[in-house]
Length: 79
Image (cartoon, rainbow, N blue to C red):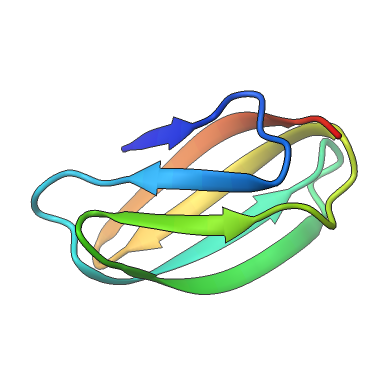
């Protein structure tokens, strides 16, 4: 899994391996562990995008669940 750009301003791109297709669930948590965003995305051509334009600048933990796999990553959001 690759996330770009980092830091993100408006849209976060998720690039998956060849084995990932279909739906995925994305959850974004603030530094205090509060859920900020929860969204279901469709992976097409091994990629999907998430709009973060309405999210405040900060560091977040992103949780991505796809089939039986769970990914955690830290991202930085800047305005």
